Image: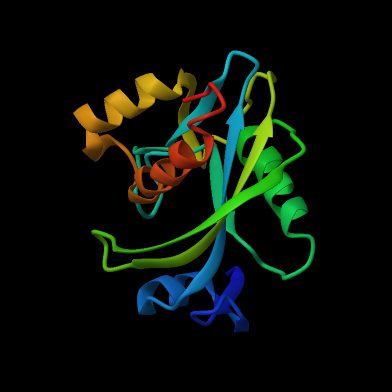
Length: 174
């Protein structure tokens, strides 16, 4: 099983633990979320695979995962984007966010998340073990649908979109 970074409240690494142990015990850990925009200012979102161990079938950001090393964090996010969505993009860090949520299967997400932004017009070729469906969507249409059907989106994506909108409201993508 994958060992991920466990951190303290100041985002200082205190060790590495098995991913499932971290989620079962609710330990604070470091993760990342990727947001890919295309040349039409649409956001690439994915519907999580129907067999995922949590949040199966829910719509979410382009891709997300956990850091397994404190080195080359942006490269880890780029590598995961290629593995999960089958596309490449040079990513840049845009903000961090923190959230905690108890999931319906006795797991807890307790994360400080590093959000990355990239641009691509590549057609995704996602890993079917990770992704059921994908689509590009205008931010305004996404926000309207999130309000109308909130239970079809992952908790962290709804949380992150508030920060994303705030950060980019003056850039004609929101």
